[in-house]
Image (cartoon, rainbow, N blue to C red; front, side, top):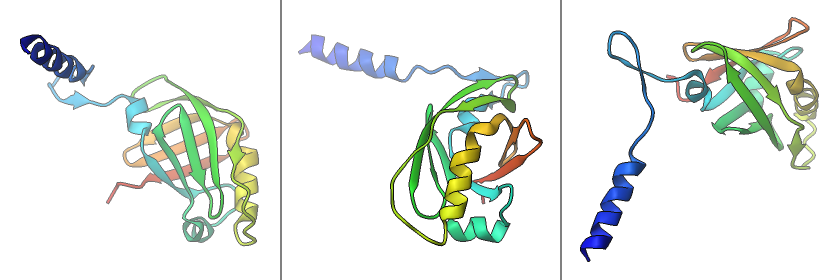
Length: 150
């Protein structure tokens, strides 16, 4: 009985161990990847208005990295992202091939097709507070707002 109790307590103690970064003033800091690890609402995408993006409820979900999902108003898209950070707030990323469900929605197909075709071109990211900015080599920018930001 004591052996089982020690095993359970030991597992709980070891399971609670995590790596935490602490800055010079003693405050706990999150790494860029963990700050990226949330749901982001699409606020700016090349060729589409903010109203179109908000009406579609467009979002990207980074909570299960390296697996990422996106929703652009109709179908759920899935792909992988390889993230490497160069500082606490920016880094590089590479998106894999996009897979998608196959519903037909006339109002949102243009956004979904453009997103699926273009997302792989974005190779850099920057975190500015509650905002995520993706950039590609053609000078295009996609901007997101954290879903849990109030």
